[in-house]
Image (tube, rainbow, N blue to C red; front, top):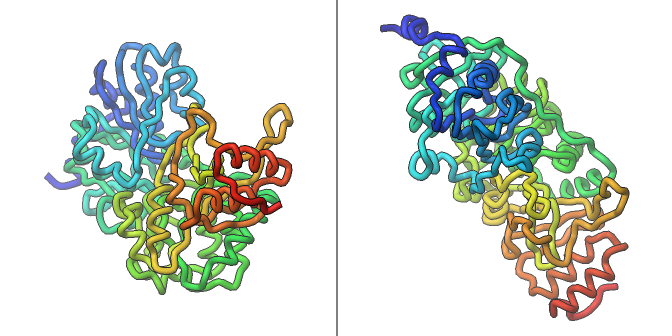
Length: 445
């Protein structure tokens, strides 16, 4: 049977496809922009008949239809590999739960450690001449998911960009159980946060540390976006990209002529990434772009891969930092905000890189909904806060008040350095707390 005949034999409707799901099943929704739409809507109609279904996914860019049924928690639970706003809002109701992971290990979790999905369903690009459905900008762990799932259902979306790779960026029709030709909705978008003057102040300090030929990893948010904007306007040249997440800022830098990848030790000339999300500009740029390499996350985020690239520059955000140097990038106390992702992998890998640097960025303060100014630099992390990066791993800490290199410092030196980039309004109290913790030797006031 040829691929066209096999396609016709496996083609079905979303309503028919979700009839394969039974009570007690584990159902994987794929990842980010690949989260199903038509299949999700069909399952939402059927879900009231089911109970004890476990759904699994991550980085949701919209609220799935199943979340919006009556009494959803009576029928299913959502396990998130990385929370975005869409699934974070469900955590307080007991519907959504975060799965703590080291993102670089996720493909291995699927292959060795976790319960295989009874059904995996997700969006893909149309089948190519060789019988492959491209994952779009979602290579991540998708090949491992398809290898281990009992049933694989693909939802074809003609708007899904085709992202080129060297393996594990597509699933072959022989692995697919059913094919649904979806309604071709626009690909979900993730707009970067608004950039303010604090972001620019932090970005300026980082950009001056970036040499020509450096290889970049950027996170999502206002500060990384500000860094990208300044790099695009700078005199830097021959930059490379090796990142977990491909975002709009890279498109701006590339179109400004700053990215060639000519000096990358591996994947020379290619921008390598595990997944991507952004605006339509990003998806248009990624589509069939031979200068981009879509790769599994156990390659992109492997510390050994990252450290092999010279002059690696890693730039990530934090929720808060304490004066011991512990970084929380994923929760507000016990309340989940996102997840560990690959931050620690890049913090470690960048420091191990020849000439590499890792930057943890945050504004020195934030304002509560009641208008109260609060410090992001704390004496100790709030109870329940997650230590994303331990005190021994942080390299550079940057706020609008400066940047400090924390490697190799004693507890009192580290406390003094961290307090020096805190908002001036909070420094005296931080010093008092440091004295009570016996990690303050002298004052830099």
